[in-house]
Length: 74
Image 1 (tube, rainbow, N blue to C red):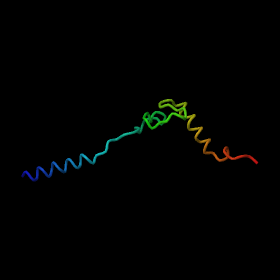
Image 2: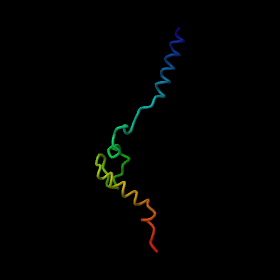
Image 3: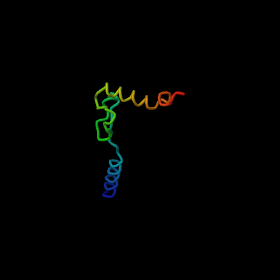
Image 4: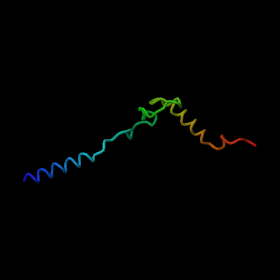
């Protein structure tokens, strides 16, 4: 009887140790308000929760990846 109880307790500990906590943004949260942590460097001028600065940062990033803008004209 003690062996079965011990086996059940050990299985419960293993299952509890394998669980994963949900972190990060929620599904219904806006993209401009999701990152409020130490991984945001702030060099782009974007602040969490400010939609206007989020849109500006996305536009600047897209322009930096646009080969037509980056290429020199002949």
